Image (cartoon, rainbow, N blue to C red; front, side, top):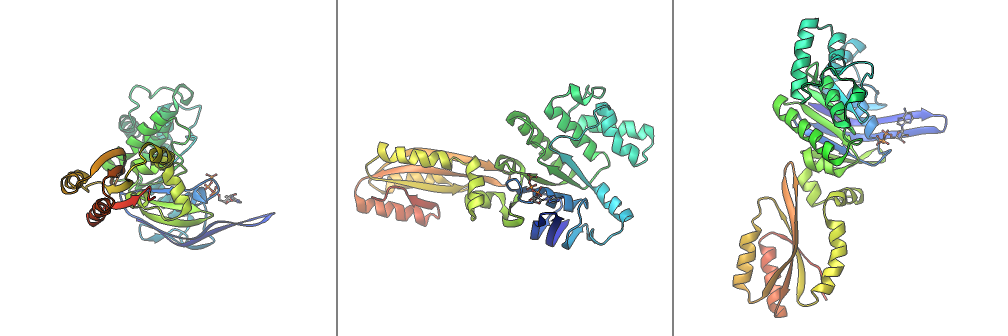
Length: 341
Ligand SMILES: Nc1ncnc2c1ncn2[C@@H]1O[C@H](COP(=O)(O)OP(=O)(O)OP(=O)(O)O)[C@@H](O)[C@H]1O
């Protein structure tokens, strides 16, 4: 659907050349929800503006629906832009227009006749859950409702791709959840491809199938969200993952756990979605003459599956404990001994 090939974007400023995006390669598939995460200045906004042709790359190719949008003329680019729509952190609504008039705006520009326009506006209001609010002005709406107007307006001309630029960053956690749910349902209902940029890992965890991590203009890590969560490779990715997993809290707790459970060995099991932990536990208890205590556990859910950790205390003969750990290893559950002393 969208391919970025060796994309670089440099800005010439009085202070010199700024490399905003460098040698980025990405493939975004039709119908997926793809997240791009990075801290401020990583190059996310530039990248998303490249995707809808608002910026031209310094080098590289951007293929949208088999067409290199860096090489087409303005008329064709405008047609492609109709297929690639966008929503924004601060909604970018027209404040002097009502909800209906905001949503109708792109339809007016596209020359849709009034009767068809109002029919489409009604459909969109229903789709985003703003029934009864059509005559309100943006100032009379909550942040979440404003973003619903933004989404309805972005969908008016039936785009194939929706770009979301920090679309939930100005919203409280509960409203963020409801907007993310709406994006998931639109993605499923309309088969729309969604590309979002964010600095919040919760957003990636909740709705994305795949993620790219950006740092200093580069994509430093990319993959299936579940894989990235389970096994982050880069320091920056680990930092993002720790925003949502309990690992930071767990690290602190581990110190406390060591004090609370000084005997035997504490081991941490990392398991993935379908992996059955329960049979492993019951076999462990039956097969080994050990005290097995569950000390702590947590589970995280992503669009592509769940993963979690379980901390056990094994008490008994040292040799038996080693055998038990070997047994767990053999079950292909990632195991780490926390207190090896
Ligand atoms: N039009 C421009 N002219 C000059 N420099 C720019 C321009 N746009 C972006 N930059 C620079 O490119 C780098 C990447 O910026 P970009 O806005 O893409 O990052 P970001 O990850 O989206 O961060 P933020 O979330 O803060 O917007 C920054 O150093 C920024 O100052």
